[in-house]
Image (tube, rainbow, N blue to C red; front, side):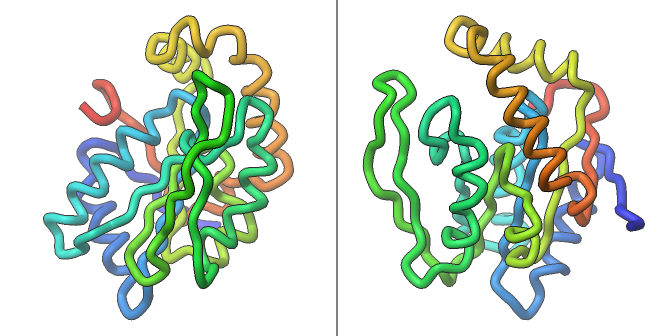
Length: 192
């Protein structure tokens, strides 16, 4: 597969053009996957803002950090995503990480543009539902450093446990190979 590789932030305008072009004539459903700490959430926030300025208003953003049902739920969350992307009454139950329990139901408008970001978002099933699929690449050591700096004490005891689930997802679903576009951060902090 000949995947375009974009370097960010310099390639952001090109990425936005790609997302708009891929969605022409159909509902925009964009999926962004990558390892923990790669900058997916920051990039997704930036993409929503850029898409809004480029005529794709009201993009719904779903961060899988809000969907996972605890530290051992990556595979389970991946399996539920096709219904979130294509269901007639889609949505998800939120998760309170501090209290370790499910929270409120968050409905999704099945007609409005949608961007889903998180590890486990890109699978063979979700790729079939998407207008554009993206993989955000970053070296493992840098990702770990960023993730632990971001979440510190809360994430440190769970890093290996979560990383094992990510590796399983990568072997099983091969998200990087499914991506229409592979993204690389070049310098600076993603999202800043």
